[in-house]
Length: 570
Image (cartoon, rainbow, N blue to C red; front, side):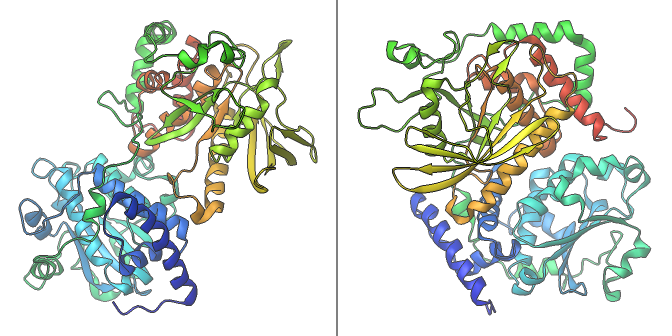
C-alpha cells in the first residue's frame, strides 16, 4: 500500500504495534501487519489508546456475532453479497469519503437471518476500507429507507448496524444519512433514540431524497437510491467477489481467539424491554416485587467464606455477618511479615466486563492501609462512596482520606494528598494524589461521595443517583484515556472501588443500576432479577433490602421516562 504518513503518525503506528504485539505474542498468533495497524489508527485519528480499544471491540464484536471466518464464495453469504443490499458506490463525497449504501427495501427478515446480513456488512466494509484514501477521508453511510415497508425493518438489526459503525468498525465515520424514512419511522422520533447510542446521534441526519444534493455529488443521484441501484456485471459487489478468490481476512486468526475473562452479565433469554418491565412492575406492584426479592434472598450463597472466617481475619470485617466469598475475594499482594492477604472486598463483573467493580466495606481505621494498598495494586482510578461517615448517630465508615484541601495522610506505604474538592448539589468529588513511598511513583485517584442517600430507606427519586453514576463513569473514561497506551486491559479500564458501610446494600444498588442501564443502552433490554442474582454470586448478599430491590426497578423506569425512551403509543 502506498501510504503517506507524517512522522507523528508513523510513531503512533509503531507504538500501537508494540502494544498489540504483546497481546498477539501472549496468544501465540501472527503479529498484526503495518497496513492493518494503520487502518485502526486512521479510524481513531492516530490516538493509540482509542485505536487499541477499537481493535479489541472489533475483534470481540465479530466473535460475539459469529463472524469468524468469512467465505464470500459460499452460500448463503455469496447470494447476500450479490443482492446489493449493502454496497459501496463508485463515487466519493466532496471530501473524498467513500459512500456505503444499505437499501432497506431489499431486506426480507423472513428470508435472511441477521447473522448473514451482518456477515455481508463486515465483509463489504472491510474491503472498502482497505483503500488508503477511504481510511484517510472516512466513510459516509446511507441508510436508504425509500420505498421500504415496515416488513423490511428489524429494530435489533438496525441497532446493530448503526452502533457497530460507531463503536466497533475500523473506519472514520463522517456521517450517517437516513434517507426517505417512512412516516412510521419519523413520527415516533424516539425510535431513532432507541437505535442509537448518545455519541452517534450527532452524526446521524434524517434527510429527504431531494436534500441529498447538498451531501453527495450529482452523479450518484438519483438512480443509486430508493432501491434502484443497478445490479449489473460491472457492479462493485460483483467486481469485489471476482477478485476475492483465495483472499484470507488478516483478522480471522485474531478473531478466533476466545474472549478473555467473560463477564457473567450478558443479555439472557429472560431479558425484558422497557415496556415489559413496566408491565411486570404493574402486575406485581410493590408487594410482588418484595416477594421476588425474598425468593432471591433465600437462595444459598454460591461459594465459601473460609478465609473471612479465620480468627485473624475476623477483626478486619466491619460486620460479622457480611463476609467475602473465597471465590471472588480480592487478594492483597504478599508482603514480608504480613500474615494474611485478606481484605473485605470482592471482584464484581459489570455489563460485558469482567471485574468492573470492587465491592467493599467502608474501611475501618485498622484497615486503612489495606484499603489503599488494594487501590494501588489494582490500578484503581475512581472510588465511589455512597454513604456518609456518620449517619443517624452511628459510625458507618472511617475517615480514610484527608478531607481538607491540601491535607495529607500516610497509610502504610501510601501517602494520600487531597489536591482539590469539588462540591456539587448531591455529591463531592475529591481529587487525590497517591504517592507510593517504596517505589516513588505517583498516581491520581478521584473520590466520589454521594450525599443524598437518606439514613434509612432509599432515595425518593433516581435522578440525582443516576446523574451521580454518569459523573463517575465520565471520570473513569477520562482517566483511562489519560493513561494512554500504558493501560492494556479492558477498554473501560481497571475496576472501580464501590463501597457503602457493609458494601452490599447501596453498593449493590449502584452496581445493579449501572449494569442494567448499560445493557439497556447497548441492546434495549435488561433484567433486574437476573442481574441481582448473578451479582450475589460474586458479592454475597448484594442488595440488602426489598426496598432497594424495588428502587432498582423504579429507578430504571424513571430514567426511561425522563429520557423519552418509551414508544409513543405506550
